[in-house]
Length: 222
Image (cartoon, rainbow, N blue to C red; front, side):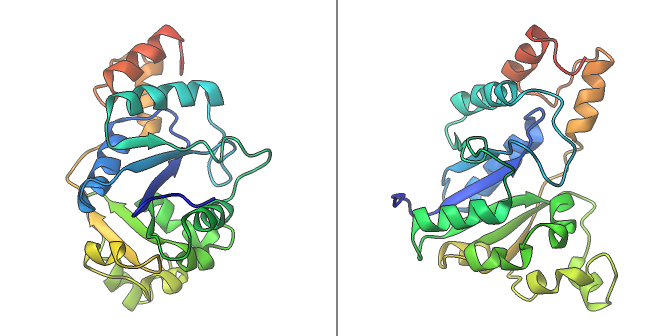
């Protein structure tokens, strides 16, 4: 099957729960590429994180509430629909088959995910299938300098840094193969912090209103 798209941008994660950090990061990625759609791709059984505290159905319901109200966001359930554990390399291969050889494919990840990327299955092959766009929150780390200095936390990232670019528009002119860092405006946010706030019966401004209402109605994270 061929997907009729000029570009395919996706952001994976557990989305437990989906919050303003996810939404703003996705919309910032969209704005980089002429407001192209960004697909939120929830993981069924995350391999590199703890298991979600909510059910698959509940996470999808919260994501659907956000997607229904946000024009540039779409939901992609391909990993949810897989029978077994889902690895990113499998998703990239599947997307590349559907998109064809020339359509730009962009994977959007956060800095935490990027730092653990060498431990992901076959991650050294990722750039063969897609571009990687890393959302950097302040304080911004000069990863280029850390890499040059041989800092141990980034020395395993050689295969990625070798393909780093500094012009986002280059991501839309090739099918894959590039690493790009986007410096986000300041926003202090984390899913674990939100879950703790809910557990302590505190209102979290970091949640979309519809998602906050859903969480309250279904007594999640309490």
